[in-house]
Length: 405
View (tube, rainbow, N blue to C red):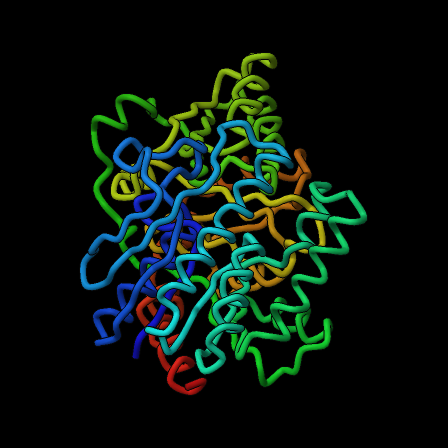
């Protein structure tokens, strides 16, 4: 089977999107399929193209058992509506050109979103080569999420986005949603249930229990200190200001927070911590994926917050599985399907999203009940290995490809 896997973000960029895409592509290639990834010149999350890819318009390179084709995109470290639109649309345009040039080679074109505009590439290839099967993956519900977060207020842009979303659902041969609630919402938008499969997020199990490195213990954790780690994107959706406000209330209680990652809200969060003189938080900046198990090992628990808006009740953050894979107990501030999974796993406790006082109470509870945390850590990895191993999930995707063909 010849597969074109289209993802705006891909390795060596880091993040949940690239982790899922790389796991899927690696499995498909190792299973004997001819796989090509169509993606951007690496720049995420800083908005600066990596040095080795600068001043290049198109690159084709071999990675493991598959090929990666990269096209130029407009990038800018300043994130606002205009720069984001130029970023997304430039990939949709140049990705379409490249995809059309090589479109006849493929049996399957698999497009993962968001951003929603990446679906334009799949639409364009499908129009020119109708025999190709176009499968659209929905990892987040856009434009619903953008509207609820206040990022898409212009009525004309909203109308265009909803029209694009509807056309992608209609013109695709199949849809893969990452949660059951996403599937229900897409059905409510008028798509037949039999056209939609669900393949949830998972973990590639590279995050694993390791001995806490003494170097990191000396650097970040003093004796008897309770350490909470947040690993991932410092973005609008996470509303990490709530965590900083909780940290301020816990300054005198020997509790510390590490924010491992970067993102569009990094500067605002750093500035807020400085302005409020919050002394028990550390921002590490971007950490390589292969180093994250060490940071998980020194922490007592991991935290996962999302804004308290309805669309996130249908979301399952991928770090939920990564924390569990690393034997890290979880403080989860997400309602809906993610909360149900955590309760099934018995691998953590939940707090009300955006509720600083409830978060403070739950942190104190965790600190004062180390035996419960120890039990949660053991249960989490067993649960992920059984239910959310990315290799098993990629096998489901492979089976869908065969069925659609």
